[in-house]
Length: 73
Image (cartoon, rainbow, N blue to C red; front, side, top):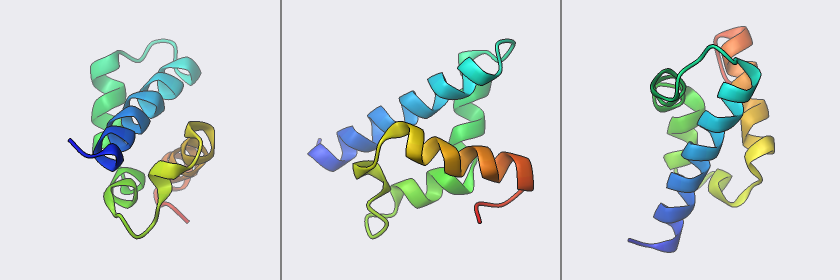
């Protein structure tokens, strides 16, 4: 596994943990489902965005906006 792939996996886990922190009734499965089916996750997987190099809280802000507005921007 490449370093970038490991960073993406770590970011995905961190996003799910942050999401659960904001939503105490959310299970890990629900949080991972939400992250994995988000536009933010698709952007995270795109090597050109370099989102996996950013801090989890920075990327989580994108996810929160997407969940609130229904889209990433």
